[in-house]
Length: 238
Image (cartoon, helix red, strand yellow):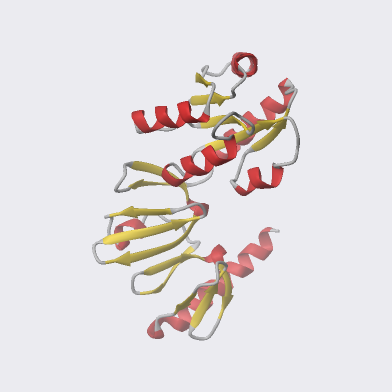
């Protein structure tokens, strides 16, 4: 496991690093590799150079130059699977942080239990189904639930997630085999995560981002039945 701590106050990064280290020791778990950065620019430069990100990043929101929220947005464009925990002196930016799907939002001074809770949330997140994608940029691991729309265009497959769009050359048929039953083929070259559908019509469906997608004429009944079954199953889970 690779963890990064990014805070312009070195004493804060050291203190957080020691807390994380002690939590893993106490739990008798392998101690993760922990990298310390005093600026977001330094962290982004490291990620770009190594073409690899961290499993978990603790970002201070307020730093000279690039702040933690903006740095997280930039990272998500290339590495949407990265998990973030934001650290700050107030709760003012909690909404923005959770819009970036932050695992946790810690207010200084940070106590050991809040850090332990962040680690527990990370552990819970990694057991969710993921899809490994060989994108045009490199190997990317994406939470399956974050994939919204998959479209085949020419020789490319465009995978739209909650954060960005991933481009790959994997054939639609091959990629569909990696997905679970939450995904449905609406028409030739268009597959959708049913959790992203806001309304199912007779010949089309409306998505949560406002898009309307036409349904294959020959499969309309089957598609509507599958969607109705999905909604029924979701209601039974609650």
